[in-house]
Image: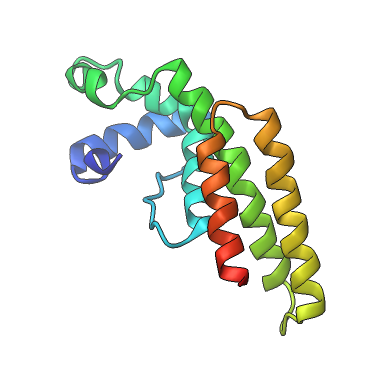
Length: 144
């Protein structure tokens, strides 16, 4: 969605689509690959703005962009599953950041719970196992 944010005309048009679709003034969020929670927020926001994003590409001025940028129903389904997977470390981070000084006796059980939730999700979201496994492995490496 960088292309929408890169043009004042496109951004203005998208803002109108977003306001019409969700009756709120929401903005797209750009991803920063080192922050789980920001990635989760970006995907969650895109999910909320799904209708606005689709609506944006129905206008004649932007219809030619649809083949390149518009997600298919299958893509949206996968994005929703990725949102489920990203919500787990987001909630873990929120849990730890709620404490002024997180302690190890709270962090280790929370971390184990996060890995357990990911393991459960690994079985129910069979079409994104590599993403879940990669997250589990990355977090396990950080623990050691």
